[in-house]
Length: 131
Ligand SMILES: [Fe+2]
Ligand SMILES: [Fe+2]
Image 1: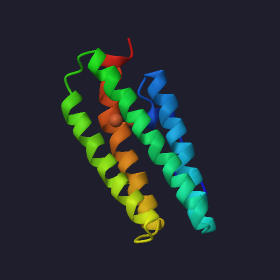
Image 2: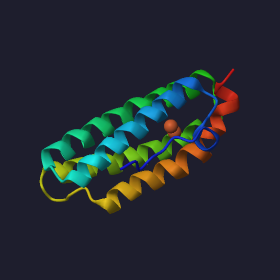
Image 3: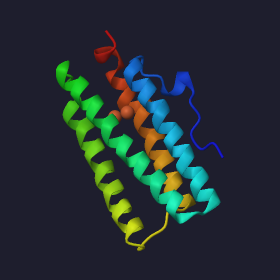
Image 4: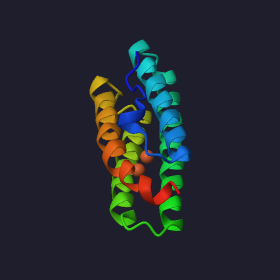
């Protein structure tokens, strides 16, 4: 099932590199969501790792671009990223040690995070990073 669907007006930042990475993130979220629906734990683990790997790559890309442009909102933005990476790392550890499972609630958390971050926090860098 498609959990994250790209809508240009909603998610578009006007920065091609970031939009393309956000689309890739959505694909990986949807792949994880499919794995959760199917319930194969090994597959869920692979998709989870695959998603988190790219989250890290994406955050590094955004932060590097903001740094290069001397973007004023960098510190606050980085804090949001750091918090999510910490949450993801904890989740990853707990999943792989068998302490927790990835469930619908986890997927909703991921969806809500992206829905609150991209259209507000990411979109704000559009004017500074797009030219
Ligand atoms: Fe961001
Ligand atoms: Fe982003």
